[in-house]
Image (cartoon, rainbow, N blue to C red; front, side, top):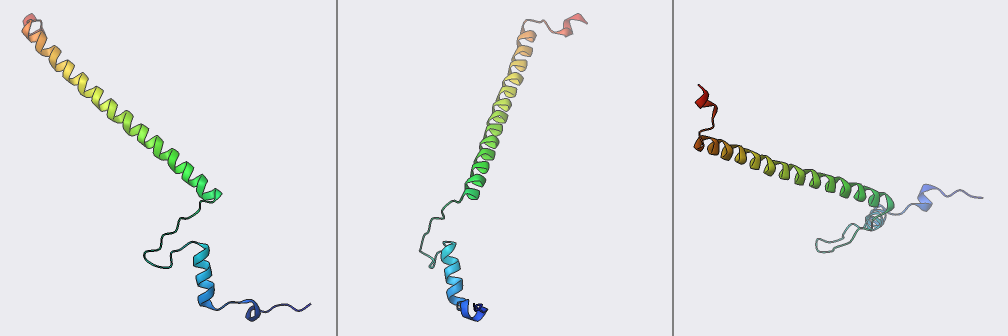
Length: 95
């Protein structure tokens, strides 16, 4: 049995590079679009990325709601202080 040498099984560099790019679905021209199929590793990574994005969006939504609630508490405290002043129920009267 004869062993094939590198010279016998190798392709010209240009053809090899072109075939490699085609395997990776690299567009040949600037206007050629190609969709990259998702392999199992890419699907797992995408799934994890989507989960992280959802968690970040949820945290941002909670933070926004917390900020709004904090603003309401501040406004209520300010309003209560004004009501107490109008009713003259402040601690200033005790002095």
